[in-house]
Image 1 (cartoon, rainbow, N blue to C red):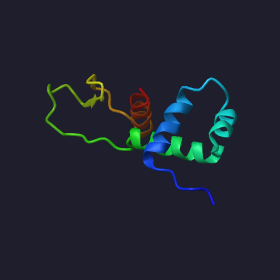
Image 2 (image 1 turned 135 degrees about the vertical axis):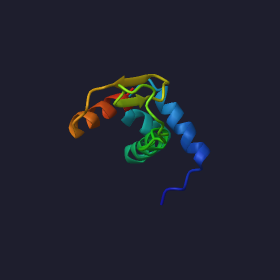
Image 3 (image 1 turned 180 degrees about the vertical axis):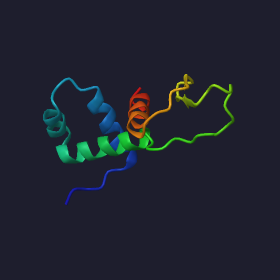
Image 4 (image 1 turned 90 degrees about the vertical axis):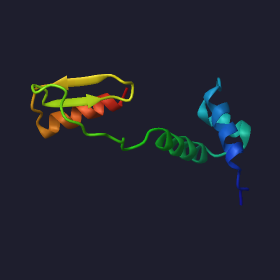
Length: 99
């Protein structure tokens, strides 16, 4: 049975992996870990870094003509009078969150 690694050891392995010059398989072989274990921790870290939901604050529209405003994490704001269909709004949010 493989020994349980500490969070610090896992973080060191992930940082080393990001700075590697060879393939994923070579890195895992050199460090005595499975590619499955590395993939699991990379995916877990990505989910923690990228939250699935963001907090929003509702406020009255800045102008009476503003029908929709989207405030991005970067601080940019998208305002439009266009009334979005559900599919269009979902696509806009996906694209905005991908930045």
